[in-house]
Amino acid sequence: MQYDHVDRLLVQWQQQRPDLDCSPMGVVGRLSRMSRIIDKKINITFKNHDLSAVEFDILATLRRFNQPMTPTELYQTLMLSSGAMSTRIEKLVKRELIERTANSEDRRSCSVMLTGKGKALIDNAIEDHVVNEKDILAPLTEEQREQLANLLRAWLLTNES
Image 1 (spheres, helix red, strand yellow):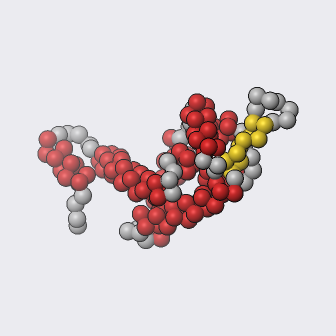
Image 2: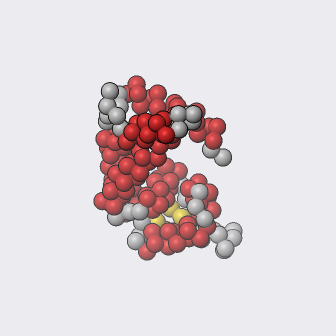
Image 3: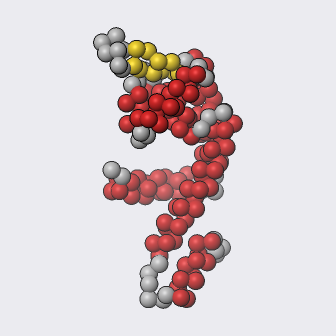
């Protein structure tokens, strides 16, 4: 059996504090390390398309919904502040990736939607993103991926608000 970084930490804790069950560190520590590795690899793909992670999420959300959305709907879907969303929307409008449409019933409100350029960009980016995620998960068998997805879903259903 091969030992990873977390195994070494657990052995050290076992030697120093044999009275303490540090086994949760095995799971949480590995998830934390995986998150950093995954984020780094995913952000490379986004940068290859000249997008930040948030910009990717905005464009992908608009693509998934496939209809105009209000900035409020977007920031609630993405769990961003309204100020952060306004700034990102403005940048994407200037890059001609999304466009704003005024609400005919309420001049204070608008909707945003992908432009043709934005749709083409997110379609290419999402294809590369999916390939990248498959590469990230390549060390696991299909069965292991399904088991992991089910375990993570169970944890999230209990802990996500």
